Image 1 (cartoon, one colour):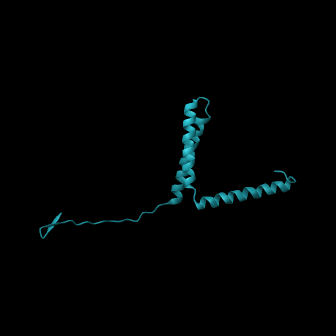
Image 2 (cartoon, helix red, strand yellow):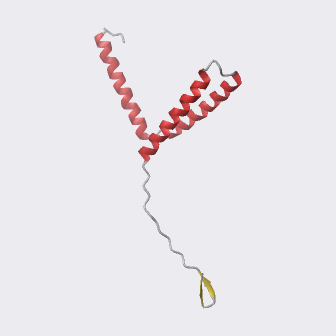
Length: 103
């Protein structure tokens, strides 16, 4: 602290560096983590060794995880889902034509 004319004076210097947030990488990381959590919870839920009380707790946790996952869905992901669905529907139509209307 410096004294200027008998009044306290503070000299402050800030350095700002550019921060890049890689959204696609973060989103992929979160998706991988969510998939892992969901898989682990499903194992607990589907295990014959799991008590009913613990199974209910795991189902509640799974519900919360799924709700959180829905919050992560963005426009880009919706477009990807729609493209995937369009491709599936196109393949179904091809199979229907080959099989005389059945798929």
